Amino acid sequence: MTDPLAPLLEMPGVLEAADRARDALAAAHRHPANLRGWDKTATEASWRAGRSSAAIDGGSIELVRDGDFDEPILSGAMRVAQALDGESLPQLLAVWTRAPLQALARLHVLAANELTDDPELLGRPRADRELDQRLALLAQLVTGATKAPAPVLAAVVHAELLALEPFVHANGVVARAASRLVCASTGLDPHNLGVPEVTWFKRVQQYRELSTAFGTGDPEGIRGWLVLSSEALEAGAAEARSIAEAARAR
Figure 1 (cartoon, rainbow, N blue to C red):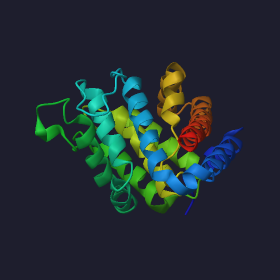
Figure 2: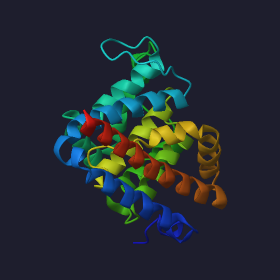
Figure 3: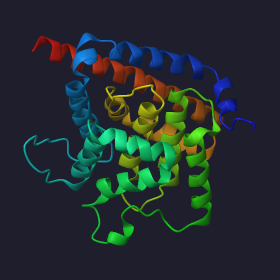
């Protein structure tokens, strides 16, 4: 069967950006602090990722490490970040690689729990036949319908979920978490040490413009989004190295 993502790999700069992201994340995982104490650095990465993910969607950036979060977007983003860290990650990855839509539902319950009083809206995509078909295609990509490099697959999953807006609330937090799941499940970033969310927040206008352009099918927008996503993964690896250096110095 024809790989549905194969045409994306022919776009200028896409494979090169993906290779740089892969090499940067591999180097971050080889840092001595991450070889011995990745569980601690992964936890710090999850805090930074959750905070930045919430900020992208207009949530608070104020963290309270020993208590609850008063702001619902940040609270949901941090619950999602914690699910992608430590002991919770293997179980979520097992669901993701077998039944991606079920994993998305779990993430949405975590992300949107305080954004609605209607339990019927938690974990359930909007009732729409076309949406169902697009989500089914996305699930096929995650479960083996493409041989595209992991950074490209992560970018496609991320942008598709942003474009589809399958849920009433918290689609951005879920989409960014799904990108992380792709990175972890493919071995690109198995412990979620990278923090691409920092770059997406710093370049939030470009993030929104290019992800929207991806959703419209504009070729240059698609190329730009794929490159931006890989650049964020590469920069997220630098963030991982800074976390590792700080941990080593303590």
